[in-house]
Length: 439
Image 1 (cartoon, rainbow, N blue to C red):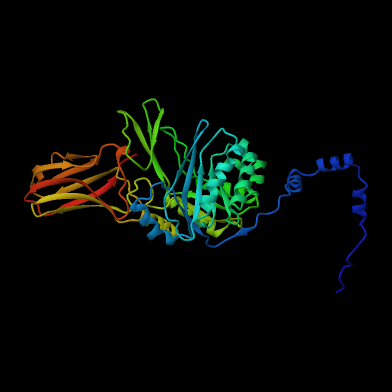
Image 2 (tube, rainbow, N blue to C red):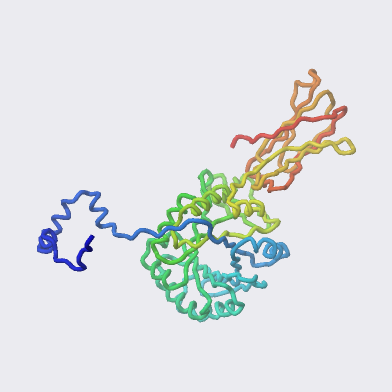
């Protein structure tokens, strides 16, 4: 078969089209069907796709490297492709700048983060000070320097100039920035993204909901949309996914009183309505699975905010994180156990044998045969309720019921929680069951 010639003259229809005036051509375009018009004007190239596993990093946010933090970095860090640790934090109060440097030993292969708080000061006036901190952090030899700056979208071009200076200061160490979904539609962000070596898209939110609002730290559907939009920037990026949670307190009028995260417990005023806001591990695992099946090629991995550390109350426990890394859907498995000790005292305990936190807004039923209830008490926010009308049938029954939903901590994977005790006379066996209370 003969091949077509490499060059050819215009066909008659093409020559006719070339002779059309701009006005006649515009009129012709208006006559096209609407669907064809969309195809003509939506000339954006298709997003290159990828599938399969990808790197999982984790962020170490603590300023104070307690023994628990050091143990987590040593024992759990190798499960991730890389850790990114907070190296320094710069904050502003008016025109005054303050700085905290985090004392730690940088793990091998780890990145380091420079956190910069919001400021009204000119970023050009801050360049020299921030570049000095960046060079100091880079001297430890991190795999990357990550800049986390609360930048208003109207200052993204100003931020770009700062990033160019910081990138030059730490070269050849890669410099990446954290980015908000609200930046993606700004042309200035495209220029900013091309001024650095990549970015971390933070699809989680730290906004507080209203007292009756349904709220998720990360909406998986929104996260997928953000990732597709970010891919059109044509720069490599990772996605920051949350593992943390917190409490939000509201007064009787629905006004936000404050937030409680890790750290010393907060004393809430009487009448405060407290909501626990948390990241859903099953939803995050399903989101990651969807990206394993199909994602933009520009998405190079995820970074989990944050590395689980023992004794944290509002972060995933390690069994939960481990299940997600294995591609499994974590789930709680809550059971109740009643055991009699040597003194004849029955101890009632909740046990979670699953790999996700279990809610303790539950009711535990206790029943036994012929015997007398001598004394009983509940613990940890539960109340003891003795059922009447059963004694004449030679049976006893009682309940241990959670008083209020908002006050209870979770039972973590592998953990136990004592609910109460009973002293019974002449009872050898007890039947127990647990059921969730209505929300």
